[in-house]
Image (cartoon, rainbow, N blue to C red; front, side, top):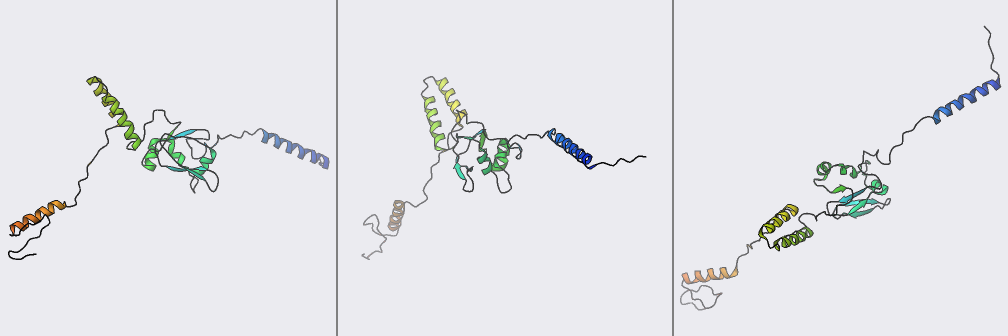
Length: 213
């Protein structure tokens, strides 16, 4: 068996060929591209998407670094998602509250109410139930229905108001439990007369016979 010794030049050329082959293999490797932010716990929104507020008074961060700005929501507002807002939405564990926007059930399970909706706010979104704006809108619609001269159409219009806005707000009257001073004075007078006193004025006190005060 004949043994062939590799010269230095041959060894160098062989190593160069092996390196070129490795570079060619690496260039052909396909690296999957992940859509921005879709890999973050499957957030239902990405930068450029819009959401709208369904509740007034919800405070959330809008981004801006360490001193992140914040905003208090108002029902009917529309917000455009930015990367800064997504970053500001994460807690210490990196979990974003935006993940709850995927379904109304998720929001109810987390907050006990539906606070946001996906997409821009509908043009016919009603004011929040029970607020002053809701009461004013409902009353305006009710008065408009009452102005309908035909009784059947008026009844249908009033039913539509109730269907759209819900039942009328409950009103209540609080009765004072403080004693009425006039009642107390009358009772004192009745007692004095029963005991034989003489009424000289409305705020009299009982007198014993023969004793002047």
